[in-house]
Image (tube, rainbow, N blue to C red; front, side):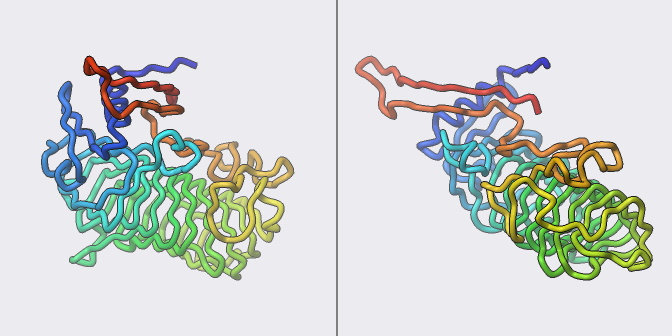
Length: 329
């Protein structure tokens, strides 16, 4: 396997992390960079297409109305032990101009998509609430990508369509619109899990012991259900699903209906979901085209160790000791 590191991205990631104790946000524009103390200043100063590197938080959320690529350190306390995690507090509001942007590697209180948003990507984030607001009550959020995230309470995006929702862990109720691809997720809600119509639902794990999920008119293939679902339910088309699977027989180390970083969401060797996905990979977050990355670190170089003296010596040198691991995805 070959791993390539582009120097400019690597350099600015390092510069961001070196300044993490000062809570400086780096905005990269081509070969130049600027540093800011708040997300509001960083977003206002950035040009469309710029990359914004967020160090360890917390930082108060600001509105995003331009196409930006936002990269944090990560949200897993273990994998970000050298630097601390990137935290955005408050409501992160994404407006139409944010289309085509990305958000990676942060812990957020709430993300709200306003009206017409398309081609936006949220990946490897830990989100308390995820919502969509449409003033016109029409399907305005579309062609977006939500991959390898943890959504801890509610995912409410009713007016959405044609989105790709893959390899996420949903703790709360998930209310999705229509014509979406919903693949290789874990739905952990105890009473009910998902509401969607006219979508493709495949390779997912549903832990709810409720009698039937709340979805209709979908194509439902190669999923694993703890409950025993009536095949005629909801006018769905069911193919090759596993029903009435004991919760205790699914994961290597997991219990209950809440997310925990210490749990192991790999399938047990004897689980019926091993290699049983529609593509021949495992059902759940470790299968499919975007298998879950342990540690949930972003794609840019990851800091294993970072130490600096915080003050310069007598001739103005700042002594820094850094150990970095390259990322292959």
